[in-house]
Image (tube, rainbow, N blue to C red; front, side):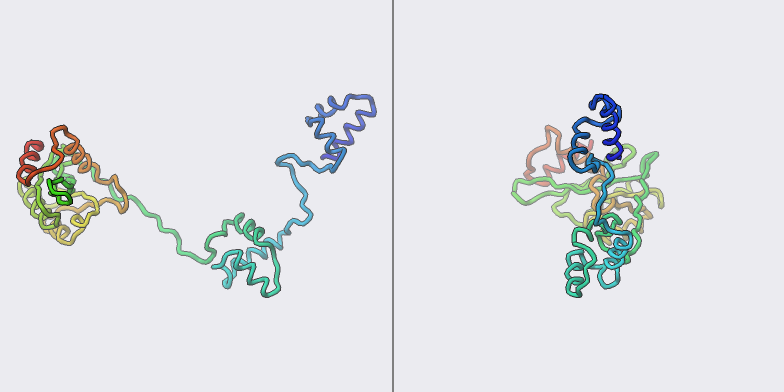
Length: 268
């Protein structure tokens, strides 16, 4: 292309045409014409096709891939492969060339046979169309007047009505307290077998065998949030924020009785 462009401009110039107008007709700048004419006629514009005299042949590229993906070298990096081949007096390409060829074929990572990636799916969503179909429960801290000591508030919320159907405050965070609260709440609300799904995050008490056995005895479906997902139990978390951000919520409680009196007024 460049040889042809220079010869056409020279021919037009010999016939008396202006050089800049000849260049404009060919859609090239006059400085490009002068550069092509005074030095190499290679097209050095960005994106232009380049002629690389020492460019790898297709056979050489296939050899690089074959060697790097062989059973002996598939677990090694191009740096290690290069050193091993040099010890054998076998040079197939530079380290950067190996990287470039492997990267073009998405082979820079582990090149051995791997197990097919398993597709994980989201657990089924719990949908409530009426009361006492899906409950959400959780535990939160309540500060005391002693630094480092807390009361623990257990709450169970009906996600359809947002009603707090059960709650208690204790000095311990154990599955025993949770078991007692769930049992009393299910009895008070007259929960029939198979009627209810109880959702929670993956805290130690929620995933304990004690709670799992209790829910099985009550014929209540246990629903757990996904691992390492922080927003799968929003109803309980929202309720805790509503409690603790009220202007009347004290900074600290003097006793567990004070905490229960305050919470009883809030629930009411």
